[in-house]
Amino acid sequence: MDFHAPPSGPTAVAAPAAVVDSESSGPSGDEEVAVEVGVDEVLDPKPKKTLEEAESREHRMTHLPKNPHCEVCSKAKMQRKPKRSKSSKPSAAEEAKPQPTRFGEQVTGDHFIKGGRDEEEGPFFPCDTVAVVLYDRGTRYLAVYPKSAKNTADTIAAMQRFAGPKDKIQRFHSDNAPELTSAATALKWRLATATTGMPQTNGVAENCVRRCKEGGGCAIVQSGFNPKTFWPFAGEHFCFANNIAIVNGDSAWNKRHKKGRFKGMQFPFGALVDFMPQPDVRVESMGPKTLPGVFIGYHVNPGGEWSGDYLVADLAYFRENPDVVRSKVKIHRIKEAVPILDGKFVFPVAVWRHERLLKADNFDVPAEVEEVEPLDDVDLLDIDVPRPPGCSRDVLVA
Image 1 (spheres, rainbow, N blue to C red):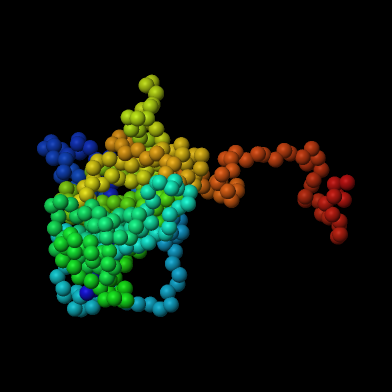
Image 2: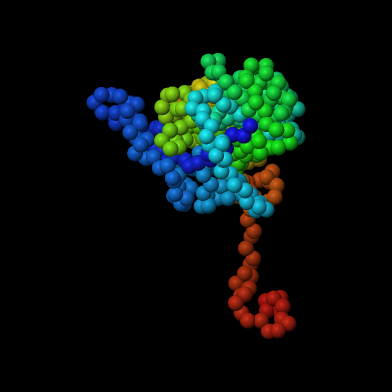
């Protein structure tokens, strides 16, 4: 059975959550009304592909749709020229089928294999090598769950995080991978499989996998992190940002949870933030109570519920080596962070990576480069003086 492919845009241009305050709600004090009005005022169902839009907060959260003025999109979403064009329009019979409207009516899923274990990680540090991508067609809710192996146990764990204790999955569509079919059977999800050897019959899941790879790739390029060990955080951040983005007046977040727009702060992946660290980290009693860090993502409970916590990595580890691996970085799970209201974000790790790339091929070299001492007879080297044919530079100096 074939499903329609999920739309990849457009994104909405929404005001940051931290901008809305209780005073804008009016005399009644109804904050929800003020929020909805704010969304309607700034909603743009068809964002223009301009330089201003490419540098906006909303585009940096998901990088959807692809903007030709965005350097990150150009690097992470480049594709080879297709050999032939294909029509992606659904047939008349497919358009006549009723579309799902509630969460759990039609869910599709697939795996993608990222690669082997990074040799630089510790031998006892858990590393993710595959990911389970799940997508709900009724609410357009997308999620990715990195796992250490492609097996039934890890697939069941991913499905249990996707569907909360009160959610009921009425129908699940996938390919004939034994891990997916066994996991769906164990969870008593009604199963429908695609035709063996024909990926086009599982087009929705294949498209979702591609979107996760491209979105996570944009996050890695934007942040400058080590792609071998930080790709799980990049993929999870993209899916969360994609779900809270307002598209055509609503978001997948609201369609599933019925809680209105996302109330938390929105930070792009890898952006510089000031945060209050965990209690085990000491800060000076007289001075700033925050530390500089880079934003990693949001902590999400089973069922897609946000716990209210942010994930921020300490910046000091990346300052020493932009290519540092995940096992050597302390990631704080915190609730307090300084909001960036003007939408001007800095990605320090990407800046350091670019600087060191121009200085040397090895990131282990010191950040400081020894300056070359000026020559004593530099005034004698006049490169603008015309030289006779066959005359060398040393002859002119002499």
